[in-house]
Image (tube, rainbow, N blue to C red):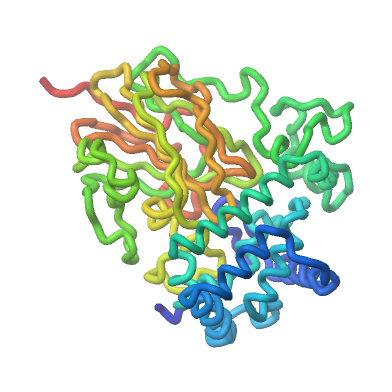
Length: 423
């Protein structure tokens, strides 16, 4: 692993899921740790199940001890004042607190990945890498995240949907970041919590009609943005198999699509990847008009990052290409109305706790460009569009260069044009 360490002080994680400054993260960690010190009762069942698994599985016990034992060597290189999770027992207590915690607003960048923040150092170690790629470990992580999701869908989670000037999602600071919220999103400011029934209801909020018009809806040559997202990468001549874990993080279609026989139809084609923002819109829309021919949700990892990028203090910030092969993801195959496109694929990729991917279209359904196809619960992560080798596609990204510094392009806006296939 490279010894280079990237600074955290002046940067967000991609999509602003983690704070841009050290002080915010330090204060948040201290607050959660103080609550955990007072949390001396029984662990919640899903957390107790993880504890029993760690202590009764030899590999898990080794990994969850190694990942915390190895932290000090990394911790001495950056963020020395960040409170550190001591061991897996401490980790479990912190998880126990988070399960009844909804993220509050902070203008410097709210902690939208609370579990990720707890594991931020340990997941970068060799023990963390081995542990968080293990299937049995991920079964337990999924159970914990599902339990957190149940809380986030409950009325109790609305306690942060208030008008507190600093930390409320409808307070003065939040209004500066989301100045046209009531005009852009379906809500009712006259009702408690603006009419949202839960934190998750707030996060999967819908745009009001007409806010995001579909670019050239009757022109099947125009491909629109499937998510409110910022361009991350464009890859041409993608392969069925590649070394996706290396620093370049090339795409490996066989793994992205879970060894689906249709993956071979995209060999030599194009992958476009873009990441979502924590503060905007988290539903997916159809990039083209066509018929949904296959859908699936692929279980995967939650806290695995590639070691080839070195220590990533905002992990999995630098691992977005890598997680397209191994993270939890939803796949929608669309046979486009435009024969110059033919079969294309949308892949929604969960990142850390943002891994609940809900598909809302069905196989055999004809969908129109710009129509909703699904959503990430509790925000959004990253996604890919995959086109076959015959598709002559020219991207128009509003003058942006794909990468972690790019900015959101509106959903339903034109991002590419497909040229007619040569006869």
